[in-house]
Structures are given as C-alpha cells and as structure tokens.
Amino acid sequence: MTKTLYMSNYTRCAACRYLRRRCCEDCTLAPFFPSTNPTRFAHVHRIFGASNVSRMLQQIPEEQRSEAADAIALEAFWRVQDPVYGSAGVISALQTEISGAQRELAETQARVAVYAARARSANAQVSADEERLGDGAGAGVYLPSNHP
Ligand SMILES: [Zn+2]
Image (tube, rainbow, N blue to C red):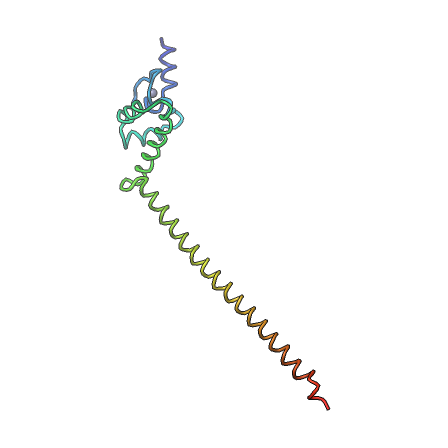
C-alpha cells in the first residue's frame, strides 16, 4: 500500500502534482503534461483552467490530443508573456518584420535595377565613343588626302 502510494506520487503528472491530487492511470492530462515540465501545465492552468483543458482534450479524438495539447500550451505560454495580445502579438510582430524585410528587398531590387541600367548605359556610351574615336582616328590619320 505504502509502495503503491509512493509510486503514484513519484509518477504524478505535472497537472496532478500542481493540483496536489493523485494521478490515476487513466489521467487525461498525464500524457501531455509530464512531471519533467511543470511550467507547461502551470501556464495552461493559469490561462485556461485544468478542468477546461481536461474537458477540451476529452472531446477530441485521441490521435489529435497531443497536437491540441501543444497548441493549448503554446497559446497559454504566449498569453502569460503578453496578457493583452497573447500569440496574436507574436504573429503581428512577425508580420511587421516580414513586411519590413519585403520593403527592404523591393528597395534593394530597385537599386540593383538602377545600377544595372546605369552600367548598361555607360557600356553603351563607351562603345559609342570607341566607335566614334575609331572613325575619327581613321579619318584624321589614315586619309590619303591629308598626305602630300
Ligand atoms: Zn495526472
């Protein structure tokens, strides 16, 4: 009896440990809130409440519970970090960062296009000058009429 009690205390999940209750074998929260990560459940309980989370997880198919628990834990984590905006704050900050990067990319591409156009125009000018110089030199130096 003492050994069983000791074992159940030892293997209590983070949820049951936090709520100071015995963790039964069919504990709904045990697979998703291991005793090794007590903060994960503390956030979830603070934001959603243990019974609500337990009910939510029971209402969905077993194969989707792990993903749902991860989503709930992430949502709770960000809500604790940012009580007003929660995960939406992170999404908004990342969208701002993305649009800033896109604007910077567009500006850089425009600059590259300007420099490429200038380089093409300078090359065209140089070859036109070379052509003109070639004609002039030919006319000035090699025209037989200039020589006696
Ligand atoms: Zn438990």
